[in-house]
Image (cartoon, rainbow, N blue to C red; front, top):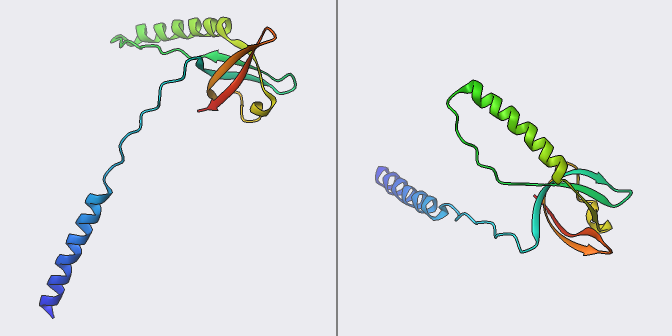
Length: 129
């Protein structure tokens, strides 16, 4: 009886370890680069009555490390003020198709495609991130 328990325990350990090895980790899928003409931005205002949105374009910025805490705080405040001024100047007023506006809310980060129709920029494709 003791021999049967030992054999059973050994076979269970072998089965468990083989299952654990088989699971492994999934490979990381990299997001494809945006298609030409695709832009990214942050929705700041959605006007469903007019069918318009205001989108602030996103920009990649590199932060440099500063050992002095007071200087870092002052630099951060200055950068925030500059970012707010730049955001106001660079925000785009865009029209959006009626069927796309329902899934968009202020504060959403989006990828979108724009076409020019009748002199107004219109969002034709949108992906909320």
